[in-house]
Image (cartoon, rainbow, N blue to C red; front, side, top):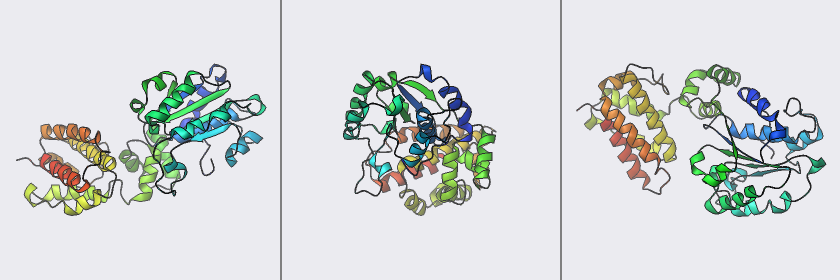
Length: 335
């Protein structure tokens, strides 16, 4: 596909070379997984280019051959990219966020044609977490009787959301978080100031950190800063959440719930004399932590995990935001 990068990121080079140098023992299906923001999609596309390259160097694409040029142009005959319509065509009317069974069935003829120059045929499934039950079963049938010279590269964040039978038919390639020094150096090269703070807010995912830095002025969202500022100076009864709630209601529930989870992890760390992990520069955080009770922080953290499990349920947005924020405030007040 055009508009995507087919180059390995700096922290992916060594892993890719070791993996791709053993193509004679390559599996027909790989599950490439890891934390968000580490470049799983880019790694997989660069791997596909390397597999299709006519003159690879130590397993990695040369970037010069006709196959590499076709991949860059988005028209290599032996590469297919299967993703939800919401990613491939976001401007469409009501694009699907799932990988539809029709998309997998459309691979049928392609899977049984002769590959170009007798090389590999590569199908990238991204994100594999977006397979619905019907499309997952359709993919399973293909993986049970894989065509010759074909490699499926499945990319996932939440492996536990995939069918166990699909996972069992893939070899797994976990991608670790990059070294923090390498990640901050890369962020600095992208023009990101205070890269360490942005990386912390992104749980160590450089691409997430880069995206955050392009969207907001501080490593922490403005609504979180406003909440902590009120917790620092006010009592429970005098805190107004209406403005904060109106801001979080514009966000995906999973995102702002995750932000609150990270806040309570930081508060717990500070309460036990340790440095905060996610928002070390958030004003007022140490003061709020001193006023908290460790047991209440732990209970709130556990409760937020349970709320993440229903983050995508069609609950009333306003009721959810007010309920969660009020509960968060109560957990930070030492009555």
